[in-house]
Image 1: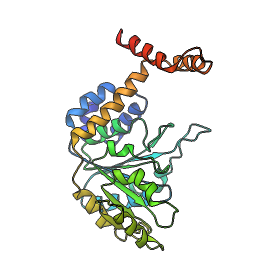
Image 2: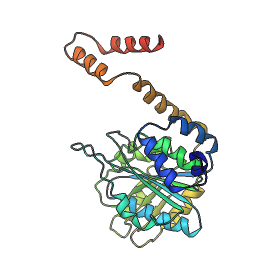
Image 3: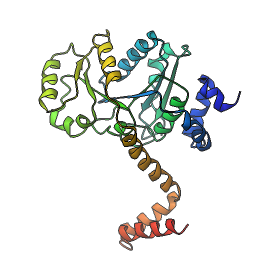
Image 4: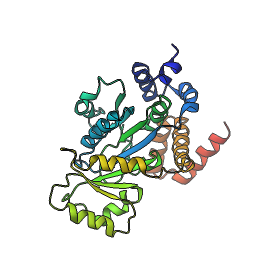
Length: 289
C-alpha cells in the first residue's frame, strides 16, 4: 500500500510516520499530494490560560465524539524548555487511555520557541489529519497566557477556556482572547466566582455564548461540545489568507542562513548599519534570485 493510500485509509502508523516527516520539514511533496483530499474535517481549537483544564476537557470531548463513532485527531501543543530545548509532552500520559483506539490519533508537538500557542508545523499537521479523514481535529494550545491568538488563523471554531478566581482582569482578557472566541467555557465552574466571570464576559459586549463546565465530573461538557460543533465556521478564504502569510514568511526566512542575521545584528548593534537598509538589501537580493 502506498503512503498516500495508507494515510487516506487512516492507517495510524503511516500517519505517525508522515507526522514525523512534517516535523522534520521533509514532507513538502507529500503535503502537496494530500491537500486535494482535505476540507472535510472540523478543526476545533481549544485555548486558554495554564491550569484552565484544557487537557481534561479535550479528553472528555474525545470520549463524547467516539461515543458517536466519530473519528478524532488531537494535536496537543506543549511548551519547549528554554534550557534543554525539549518539550514537556505530558498530554500523551494524560490521554493514554485512547491510544488503543483505532479511531483516535494523538500527537504531542513542541512549540520550539514559537509564540502564539502553536508549534511551527501545526498547520501542516492539520492538512495531514484532514486528508486522513478524521471527523474532528482538536488542537489544544500550549497554555502560555493571553497571547494565544494564532489558533484563530487555523481553527474553524475557537473555544476559549477560562476559570474563576485566577486573577485575570476581564479587560486584559478582552484585549487578546476575547476577540478570537467563538464560544467561552468557564471550567471548574463549581468554584466561587464562576457566575461573576460569566457576567463579566457577557457584559463585555461579547456575542460569543458562555458555558459553565466541570471537566472533572463532566458537567456541562456535552453541551459545550455540541455548541462548538454547531458554531458557524470561519470562512475558509479568511483562514487561508492568514495561513498563507505565515507559510510565505517561513519559506522566505528559510532562504537566508542564520549567520546572516547574526552578522547583520552585530553591525546594527555597533551602528555600522541601520536595520532599514539591511532589510531593503535583503529584499533586493531575494528578488534578484
